[in-house]
Image 1 (cartoon, rainbow, N blue to C red):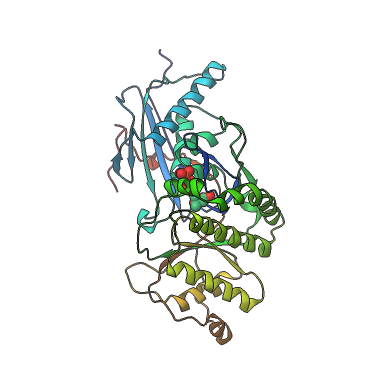
Image 2 (image 1 turned 180 degrees about the vertical axis):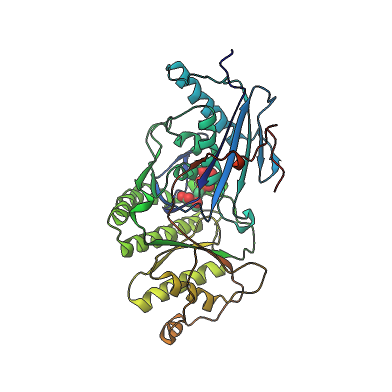
Length: 400
Ligand code: DP6
């Protein structure tokens, strides 16, 4: 058909998100439907993001994907589920008579290249940003503008929360087909400008068990997880939403810490038990509670996912003092990494009283580095053709 464009190429970026009410456990492994709703904070892409280029062309012979410059198996089931789902939505749009004036052949094969601006070795969850970015980029090349929760979710459950900026809820839904298991924004990134996020990258001792198999064992064996999902999470979702709407840091921080602790309690209740926290993680928990005790209120809150790294929430007026407390307790070892990355933080001296309250034997090198960031926007389309990760031949551009 003369009206068909030969090639369409789009480049997008998507953010990382951190849950403050955790998702842990599926009621449907195939559709990736959760046993409880969850709520997260989207982190700013200036510090952490995935960039993805998707291109479709009648010249491509097969679907192909490159992650951080390396070609990966396009046949893996979750990737296939995302591709199937986006093509289904594109077909639906066409049969609904909503197609673009220049329809692209849905039989065109796609090439995808994706990279993170943060080291995968840091053990930071990259699958959420990765699959959100994939869903967003595929939607643009195939001309789909419906809700993308299902596409991203089929890649990784938590990925549907990276489709929006600010504060995001993933409603578990009730339907067996998952049509009502969708993410939506609770408040935009501009809502709470004082909120700051510090990622404490811990020196990992071992590779932790992945979320997918971990949560599967938890669903099979933990009565505590079942109780949490059914009896506790609904009220926590409502309370967390209130804390965010009212910018109530005390209550937000306390609930964030309690929910992280409860998630890790369900891991310990799993049989055989799973432990994601390391000795350093536990020392960070102690440090946060002592720091708060010194101030007589909740000034910092920690949360941990399926690994030992801590994510700290605090307000802009507390960042400098808390970073100094972290430095005091975990003196940086020169390991080639700069200790503080991201947003600038003023150096300050700790008071003798605070040092006395912290009362910890320092653990040199326990924290490799800190990334200081804030709440950020959802996925973006990059208009600059120079940003494409694929060249005109549809293959990854050589690294600059
Ligand atoms: C602890 O979304 O990585 O980070 O759906 O199997 O891909 P799959 O799991 P994933 O699990 C995230 C678990 C968590 C909590 C959260 O982000 O809500």
